[in-house]
Length: 290
Length: 341
Image (cartoon, rainbow over all chains, first blue to last red; front, side):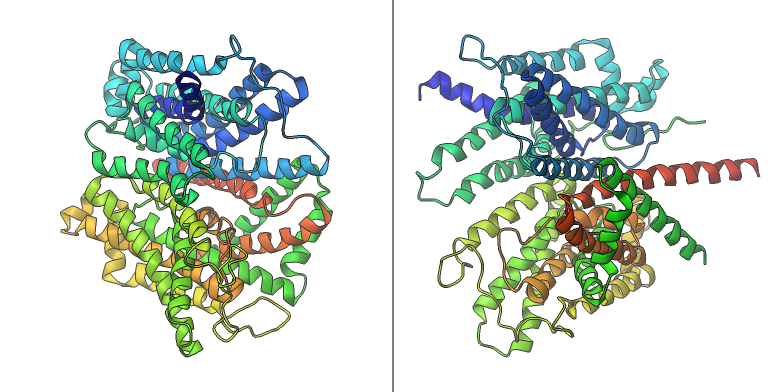
């Protein structure tokens, strides 16, 4: 394989987790830990396949996935941000719901003879690059610009670091956090859509296989900075690619390669620890006084 | 009396969520609930099935209770459950030939021990290295599942080497089954004992008190000279031990061997079980029995409709959100009431 197509292949494996991790970065910067990525990605992945299969258009599939990702995450955000309930609890509920919903719909669909494979993917630009992959660096830069170059980004970060400061500057912490979750949901939708439409062109039960959780780990790994989060995603993407590259060719057990992304993520977290980069109020519900 | 009413309301609420989910998937609600009921409580075999499913849910649910009450978000019940099974299988393989009763006990202890080690490791990572338990335990779940897959293709594979399962335990080592017709085994009593033990521990012992204080407010705990880190690591060890116990009891009580599909999400499903049980031991066994019944029932539902146990997580997700919303609303109401007094 020539270096360019090899690189593209690795980026392809990087993309789903990278999109999800970028969205999670925005959400966490505003102080909300969204554990529900995995379930949201599953729902979006399912929607992408069904809509793309029915309409023959991958772009419509993508739109449906992003819309549903947004919807599901905003429902979750209603609990975590508006009602200020426990973020891990609400996220876990969304994960369960996403898994149960898509698995059951899949069972029902299979019984009705619905096809879940061979759906339309994206038309490659010049026959080489998936257009969604082009979005990855653009969105990565966009997230950086939003969080670190725009005034609203400063307010969003304040909502995660020290909410009273954001409030006294005239911003609503609740609204800032809701915006953060909206980005997070749309990105998770994009991640789910790319997983099915960009990589497998099919859906299988629980096919996210922990990528939503890996994405959460990647945010810590990338020190809450979009560029580093992308780099960390690329490392994990490379390790995922490696599994396919060595399959059947290595004397070492395949499980060892399958375990690498998790081991590396854990190992890096152990090395860097939580550090001082973590938003001070991450995971702490905000209640307005009085 | 108040508790009874609360459980009845919860039960009715959950039934409503189930009916809603069935209707949303386009099934005949009355007919489907009838199947579910038949599978869960229709006859003694069905009741046995419910109790057998409720056993790992209770044990792992207790594990979640202990960790979460200490403020440690252990999401790693699944990995600890799997490691419990692996620990048991290692002992079964190493000590083959010793007295069956002794072997059963050693298998169970090893399973709980393996789970406890994994839990303690995650706790240590958070306390000493700043790696959040939420993240580390999730990663460990995947690692434990891969370790299981690998070991079934390597050191723990059955001696013929044909299929990817471990050696079946001899009948004499398996936990006693009072009725040949049913899968019901005495591991159910282990779960019951564990409920009492965890309840006593949390409510009446100094260590349990410290655990709860740490969970409610780490700064208050520090002010009272409680070693927060140590308490958290211990809570995670106990939590992992209970989840490992869930796994090994399934191994030595139900399956008798390990396969790739050994875990079946029990450790994960135990989280909503514990949450809906109000993170207390007695609530957990009630909610575990409820969801055990739902699992048992869904096996019958599966025979007549395309839908099976994948229904359960969907119901649980909805139920947890409804529960969160409801407790928020109740809190608001009581706050408003206190405010007006």
